[in-house]
Image (cartoon, rainbow, N blue to C red; front, side, top):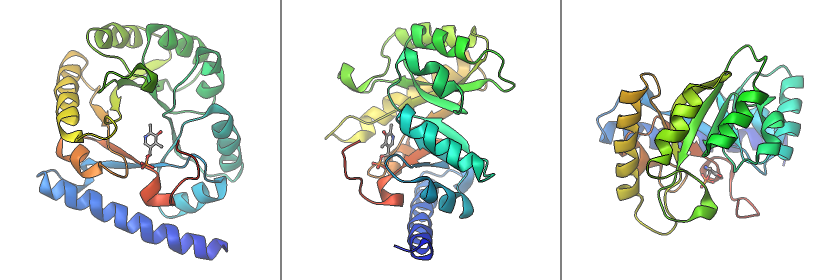
Length: 235
Ligand SMILES: *Cc1c(COP(=O)(O)O)cnc(C)c1O
């Protein structure tokens, strides 16, 4: 496809996604600008990221270090500044690399990872914003903290140099109504914001469930498929 064709396609899907977000905000009695769109560009080329930036997208998310480090380099070389979110499972040996390009890391779920990120962030001018990934199901393979671990990890983040606790992130359980899960997330987010004033980001909602997430207080929705199209792989 030509760049112009792809630009028109992305402009149209962006318009539809922005409409969905705005309608969900109205339905929830929230101001339409209460929710930030994060475009999940994994598996799509840097050229798509540049087109989205040209269309006004400010926040972009990736889930694999290797792919993200190449893409962020290409975009930066074009002189385009975006807020890069990392949303994938993160091994400690990748902390240094991810800290080199990510503004926000949404998938922190252990004290040890927080410590590795803090070491990797040494010398940065701006701290890395950290969101704690909360497990909304009991599947350890999908990552995330549960129970009192949430407070152990959040205390570790707030006392770590180079990191700033931004709030929570979650993925709804597979194949179930997302509402009860997002309702639990909303309760945790309320407790989090009381304990750490300013840690009030709630990243929840994807292409299939953004309306439910906005209903339960999401401040950021992470949209891939509805914006860029179906991915070939399942990630
Ligand atoms: C891929 C991904 C998304 C986007 O999912 P879509 O259903 O394509 O909108 C959101 N969050 C995370 C953590 C992801 O890995």
